[in-house]
Length: 192
Image 1 (spheres, rainbow, N blue to C red):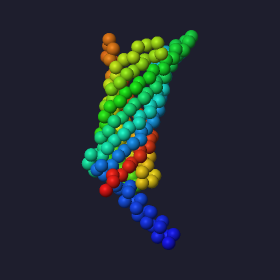
Image 2 (image 1 turned 180 degrees about the horizontal axis):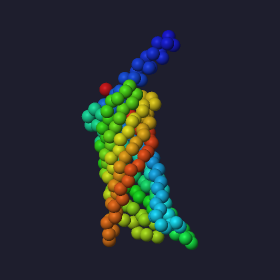
Image 3 (image 1 turned 90 degrees about the vertical axis):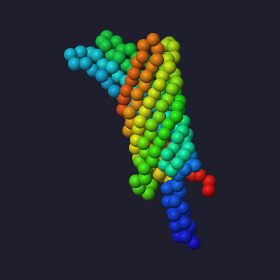
Image 4 (image 1 turned 45 degrees about the vertical axis):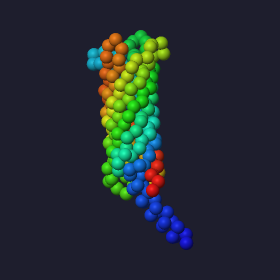
């Protein structure tokens, strides 16, 4: 009896994992990311410019066809910069809040692993510092990685991506960069 129950649950889990990216299923989750960089100039020994960025990106989607989800993404980014130029150091923290649509497509590669490609666009506001006025921002991203299903409803994701951001004020400023991230997605199957 015990072996039959365990075997039944195992078989049901395998079919459920495969069904989580089928049409009429739901997707909820997100990722977090961190990037850090240091810039130094040759010939200038006492100067450095450091940037650290932390991102939180929750999202909610719906599978319109098998393996293709469309949804809404929310992005919160906090960026800390530090400029050292002897005799002192200046630092600043900026924040970004934006939201927009995304598309995500999954490719089956193994029983509990799928590879996905994700593209999205977000629009919102950017606050360069505590005393500065907010600016309009538009962000576009493409990322990909494996989704490893830990159980029938939860997938652990690792991503590598490229993002571009444009800030609108009196002058237009654009930032481009690569990032890595890790996150979870909850897959809720359709009722049949």
